[in-house]
Image (spheres, rainbow, N blue to C red):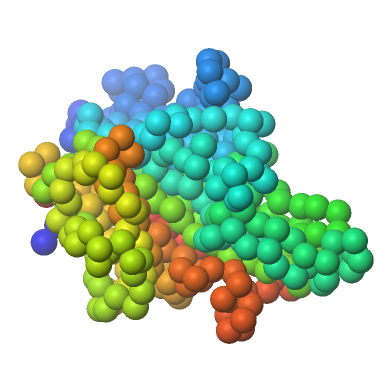
Amino acid sequence: MLVAEPAGRVVTGVPMLDGEQHVDRAALARYAGDPSALGGVRAVQLTDGAERGLRVLEFRTGSGLSFDVLVDRAMDIGAAEFRGCRFGWTSATGLRHPSLHEYGDENGLSMLRSFSGLLLTAGLDHALGAAEVDANRYGYPRRATTWNAQHGRAANLPARLHGYGEQWRGDRCVLWAEGEVRQAAIFGEHLRMTRRIEGDLNGVEIRLVDTVRNHGFDPTPHMYLYHVNVGWPLLDEGARYEAPVARTVWQSESVTRQGVSREVMPGPLPGFVEQVYEHEVTPDPDGKVRARVVNDRLGCFFEVEYDPAEFPVYLQWLHLREGAYVVGIEPSTHHVQGAEAAYEDGSMIFLGPGEERVYHVTFRVGRV
């Protein structure tokens, strides 16, 4: 069994750097005039190429866990690594400033030109495949339908940054950032997502709390999906994808045709076609679902923990093609068939005026 590195006891002497103990505030103050000697949050702006102008918050916990929050891309997470082992996927697109994103391009697949990083947030009113849906609820005769690209608009919307930094709660130092993403149109939706990201100094967790609220006055559709993307070198030949799967309820045709295991990963494969699954999963005794990628050779794992009451659907994505080698852990509010099916079977979520939903997800790293 894999266990995250324990919090352990409070250090009363020299602050420890191994991620297994809390950092005592008084002891840290004796050695350094600021917590940034061990870890912290730093705001930077990228300056070259397609990423030029992108605001980034660099988190360093001091335990070896570091990650980048992409403020101008919905406060999603880009690069992420643990003790020199990168686990956040780095694709050929790299990072791209949202001003370069053209939502209507390529029959709804334009997000594939800015698809990189540990986390892509799909939503706020649409996720999964591109679809044209009814928009008469907004009362504008010239806009009877709305066309939505794959995974919606959220991931390429800049956030309004509320703040970031380090906050002591007793002897616990919390690294944090918070911002708001607004998705709004005249004669359309007005949804806002407030994201709070936290990690502990000398900790091994990334905690996210998202609140999606309807600030408009019309019932508004809401779909939400965490596209968590794990890449090399944590993902490698022999790495294990572990999830509490009770049964698989849907899988893409490519699964049968290719016959590639969804549990033990091969190395990059020429010509591989993505394999997608929807699983029924069994929560742990505490009611949470935990899925992970484990690399025994490197001796570490990455884990996603979520509440199935908030995300009732679990999707798995394998894209093991040469040059784009990645696996996805995807908690979702809706089934893989997407928006059109959700309207047909009545499972589409509608947020009434002032109504909100809150989502809690934890990412965790540790040693095997």
